[in-house]
Length: 87
Image (cartoon, rainbow, N blue to C red; front, side, top):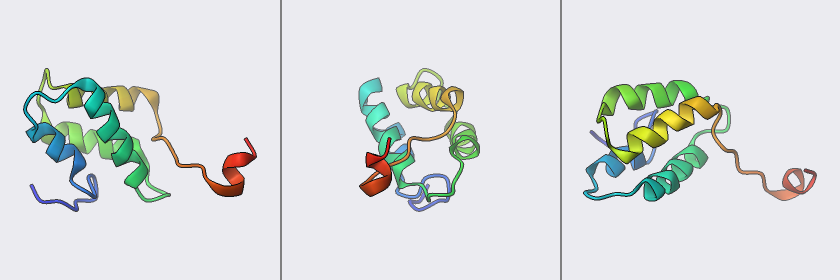
C-alpha cells in the first residue's frame, strides 16, 4: 500500500501494521497523530471503517485501537490559539 491514501494521508496506520512487536500504547500514539493529520472537515468514523476493512488483522494492537476509535466517535481535534483558550 502506498502512502497518501485519503484514509491514511501519511501512511501511519499502514506502517503500524508492519512494525513487529508494536505495543497498544504505541498504536494509540500513532492513532492520535493520524487523527490530527486529517483534514479539518473529515469525519473519522467512515475512514476508520475503511482502515479496519483493509487491514483485518485480528489480535493486532492497532486493530483494537481502531475499534476503540469507532466506539468513541469523532477524532480528537487540535484546539490552539484563542479558540483553545476559551474552553
